[in-house]
Amino acid sequence: MHGVERVGVIGSGQMGGGIAQVAAQNGFATVVYDLDSAALGRCKSLHDKLFNRAVEKGKMSAEQVRDAQGRLTYSDRIADIHGSDIVIEAVVEKASVKKDIFKGLAGAVSDRTILASNTSSISITDLATSVGDKADRFIGMHFFNPVPVMKLVEVINGLATSKETTERVLALSTAMGKTAVPANDRAGFVSNRILMPMINEAFYTWMEGVAEPEHIDEIMKLGMAHPMGPLRLADFIGLDTCVHIMEVMAEGLNNPRYRACPLLKQLVVAGRLGDKTKHGVFKYE
Ligand code: CAA
Ligand code: NAD
Image 1 (tube, rainbow, N blue to C red):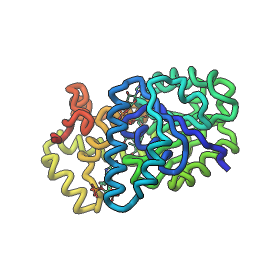
Image 2: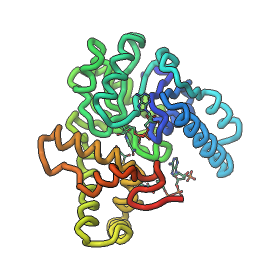
Image 3: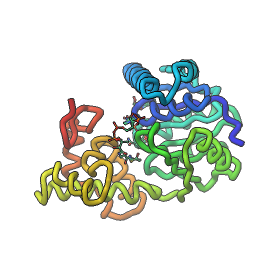
């Protein structure tokens, strides 16, 4: 049994917002914390929009939506998540930022609280060094974007993660309507070890003029039955996140073949981060 009633989520961006929504929809009292109150506002608006659409489509009743909304709290004070039974961190893909957050949390949460990171690629063993003797309760809980739609949670044990923590997280994933699949603690785990080199190669293909971006995507969609082409998917994930993941893999797997394509890096330098800035590879309304 997971023993979780209260879920705390750190970061109210596309992943944190989605994780909080799914937790609340599945009956958990959920606090989502972000240091940026504008991000919290955007998160709440998106939740309200998605809940309204679920009612219109008959997927949720108005009462179910009211209950889910009633279980959601949006906060810009980290102390509001200290009473959680699990904290799921979903901030920028940078080890130093994540470690600072967990270091602060380790002394503030209870001895039973699970500390989970939604990192896409960073070593769980490394992140767990920030929580001292709570490393046995530290785990990777990797959700996929968009969280309300994608069924998978990739579960990653660090070297010190206890069996009990893993079992609680597997049970919690099921209670959140997801299918948990284990992967070992290597940079990029399984999902991004395979996905990101494909996305990176799409940028090289574009940079070398092999085809226009829309044609690269069309070829991969129609030829490979992918729901989105790799360049559209990169915009959807966030080009900054793609670069961070490639950098973590190049360093963590000690192999230059994971270096980010110069064109991908250049777009990030120019502030073209994808959907979140309404301009990445493609432009959005
Ligand atoms: N948040 C919540 N729900 C969303 C959403 C979002 N951002 N975007 C779409 N949806 C929902 C819609 O509400 C709709 O739900 P209903 O059927 O209940 O109405 C459903 O998804 C389908 O949406 P659409 O009909 O508008 O669009 P679509 O059929 O083109 O599907 C998609 C959209 C689900 C995003 C689909 O294009 C897809 O599966 N794309 C690939 C996504 C993918 O590969 N994700 C993994 C990214 S990698 C990752 O997450 C790991 C990492 O570490 C980087
Ligand atoms: P995002 O940029 O949409 O959101 C990050 C949020 O974290 C922002 O709202 C920001 O204000 C907040 N934040 C930053 N520093 C903070 C801090 N110190 N304290 C509190 N809040 C802080 O990013 P995202 O796409 O949601 O990604 C978040 C994490 O999830 C990353 O580790 C990423 O690798 C991982 N992830 C992303 C995807 C994806 O498709 N985007 C999929 C799976 C996992």
